[in-house]
Amino acid sequence: MFQRRSEPTSPLLRSEKALADSNLNWSLLLVDDGSADNTAKVIKELSAFPEVAGVIFSRNFGKEAAMLAGLHRANGDYVIIMDADLQHPPALIPALISRALETGADQIIACRDRVGEKGVRKFLSKTYYRMVNSLLDEVRLRDGEGDFRLLSRRARNVLVNLDERSRFSKGLFSWIGFPTEVIEYQNVIREAGESSWSIKSLFEYGLNGVLSFNTKPLRVVAYFGGAIFGLSLIYLFALIIGWLINGVTAPGYITIIASIIGFAGIQLLVLGVIGEYVGRIYQEVKHRPHYLVWEEYSVSVQD
Image 1 (cartoon, rainbow, N blue to C red):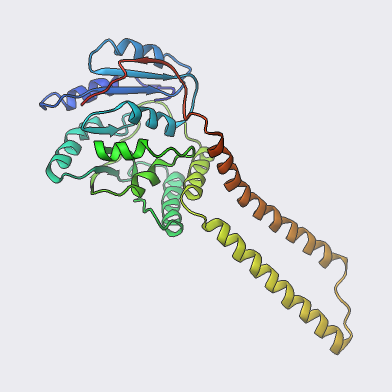
Image 2: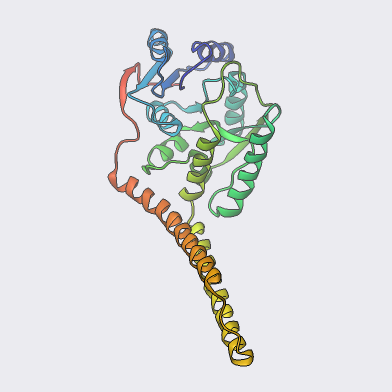
């Protein structure tokens, strides 16, 4: 959770209500991703309950780091990943567990529809999923599929042993495979506050997803460069033939300047794509921790 604008106790109360009639042993782990409000204080107070654990980051490390911190500390038979804004309804928890027990699947995905989403975000999301699935060979992402899901101990162990720095969990969930089931649910409107995800942050997250699982952008750039080179040769031959036949001189400064600017832009584009991959290599070789913990409470979570 980060900058919780609604009551931070809500996830606990809703989860407790959802699991009240079950005979399962369960615990709730709350991860504060460096919030500047009173979220950390509330988590500390909630950790007085035996079924609640808390992890407080030293600063904001991002959603991926928060999920990984939870997976590191969850050692039950099953773990369910949820956002604290209650758009992942705790009432769906029993259905996830029941499906896992019935089918023996290692992943139960809660896939939502897009009712109530703003038009621009809905359009961008659908476009992104289509683009990603056309680019990625190893993974397939469903439209409406998020991080809300149940994982078996086996799936959880595999995920925490993937030590890459630039994590894109949606892709990793698909990449590890294992028997998977899907439960669909209706989109839940946020109860309070606004999403901290701007269009810019969503774009960066989406770009990370594309670059984390394939090298096709590099290949596309190479093909593009080859096509430009081929067109340049054709244009050069056309100029030479025109000069030999008609004595037509080559175009003047405007054509030259336009060509220089065009090729400079292409070179910068190529360098930008290569730079994105080099930057990811740089992050990997530094091998810094995914997150730093300021405080922990009841860190052993058993379901």
